[in-house]
Amino acid sequence: MKLQQGDKNQGIFSKYGWFILVVSVFFIAFFIIQNINNRFWLHDYEVYYSAANSFINGGQVYGIPYGLSSGLYKYSPFALIVFTPFAILPFIVAKIIHFLLLSLCIITGIIISVRLSNKYFFENDERRSYNLMLFLTFLPLLPNVYTELHLGNINIILLFIFLMALRALLSGKEINAGLLITLGILIKPHFLVFIPLLLIRKKFRTSATIFAGLAAGTLLPALFTGISNNIFLQRSWMATMLLHNNSLISGQDTIYSWIYRSFVQYIFPNAVDHDKLFGFIVLFVVAIAFLCMIILHLKKENQAGSLPDLKKNNFIFEFIVMLAIVPNITVTDSEHFLLSVPLIAFIVTGFFRHRENIFIKLTGVVCLVLYGINIREVIGKVCSNWFTANGMLGLANLMLIAFGIFIYSKLQQNKILTGNKVPN
Image: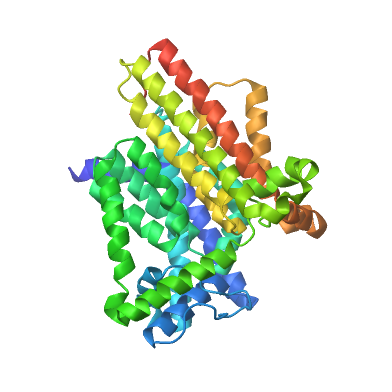
């Protein structure tokens, strides 16, 4: 039995060992260099840490710049409770713990994403190199990984939470999944977009858990502050969120900005004066397009009764596309596009597992390069600033979503036509 366990561990190391080792060395080197250069700042994490300290001491939380002048706390009052255990530690200790947690979530999130794609979408061929797939998934993420680690944000932690929720759903643990998704929504309400998907897919226990969890999470801070102060905190949070999303068009990476700059400003130049209405219209169109994709999936599921796993595969793909689109429909920073990791893993894994013609593969490579090329030391300051100012990351992410949908539709159609069982 011990020999079998050892063989199993050896197998795990041969699959992921080189990736874990190399990326871990990269993170350690990054940590050392940041400290040598006195750049181990984690300004975003300083906001969470300082806001939690202010919360503990009964001070003002919202509307106060922590660290940088732009360092306003924009998360929910509930999130303050999540950050509080670290706020009682010295800041340098809390920063190191947070950095280690981010590093662990990046490594684990990429491994889980590649495993999901390999297991559910493509041939589960153990002879293929997991390490190479993992490295190719990690490579386009480098600019956003750098920003995430340098600022100490929590997007990769949120990605890990939602990947755990997806795994719970696939295991039939709907309540556990609901609790995890609730945690994500209470930290960043953008993830409310998952509720319609869960309802359409009849994940009713998960949805009910989310509704109950949101109510409990909204009331929970009252145990520490009292009801009136909790109401004040909730109102302050909403005001801060509205201020942050005051102009949807201003976010260069958003789908609203791209549509406005590409078409609308030439036809309706005054649309900028009604950018919120324009934003809601675009969001409605995006929602309808996503709904059409789900309806098409449901139709194919009904037609392919001999493929019982098709429904599961469709749901997984819808889930990872929903994750990827979130940064494009919210005014946010570049590191939030780490939510596209599962979609990138799907595309990269497809290069190994699915035979496509060279043109299709080159299209995918172009999308991935555009997504991950904005490294100032590689393309220069001028080009990097141009990429950022013109929202090229947002465009690349939209291209990845479109390319992923195209690849998945071909894969799905092939499974239906050939009658092959979708791998599970």
